[in-house]
Length: 68
Image 1 (cartoon, rainbow, N blue to C red):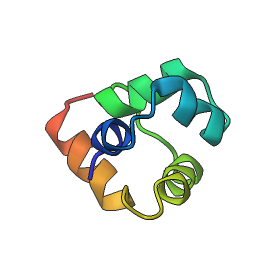
Image 2: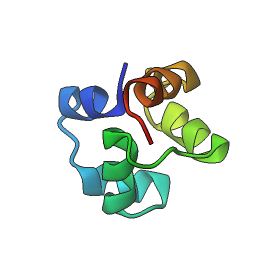
Image 3: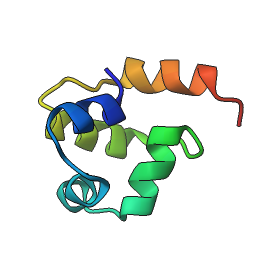
Image 4: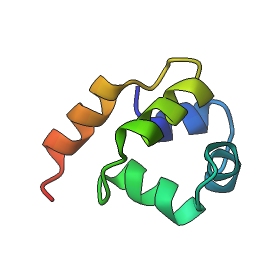
């Protein structure tokens, strides 16, 4: 599952996720859009926030679709 899909399903906005992750809403947005690749610590934080719904494999899929 992609982070944006999870966020929308749970009715969370960028600021909600950013506060939980300890980063800015802009960073969350860039991660979701594939404009910035989260590091392993950030991926683990997203995994914990989403209860395992968003995994490392989801980020790999996202970044294969979006050329950097």
